[in-house]
Length: 122
Image (cartoon, rainbow, N blue to C red; front, side, top):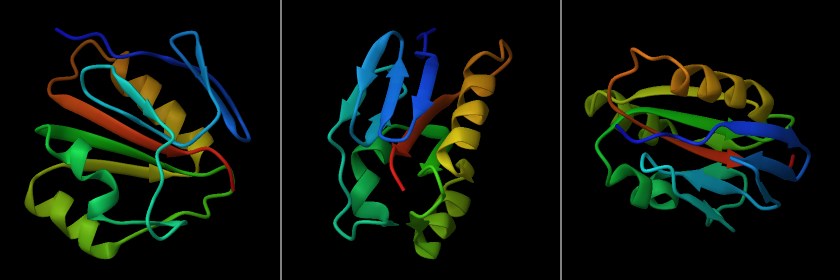
């Protein structure tokens, strides 16, 4: 079983994962790999093309952090895709999304791949 990194800390524009500090938006893959400098074509709007590399993994759950004040919006078509592909999703302002992420990865009975993406600012 692959060990997912714990998110240790978060504040506006800064996240610490597994002891590593990141200062840009990021994606966490089911392998535990973190891709930083993640951007979206439409800024504060998340659509399929922004996370298609993450969706190539057969996810059971995706956590989406929409920023410290929840400003990033998620395309309703993307939510429909999650539903048709039976991918559970949890979308919150980033602080709450981090709590959900950490709870899921620390649950010993969690089965399936989990991925996450986090907007670190607004």
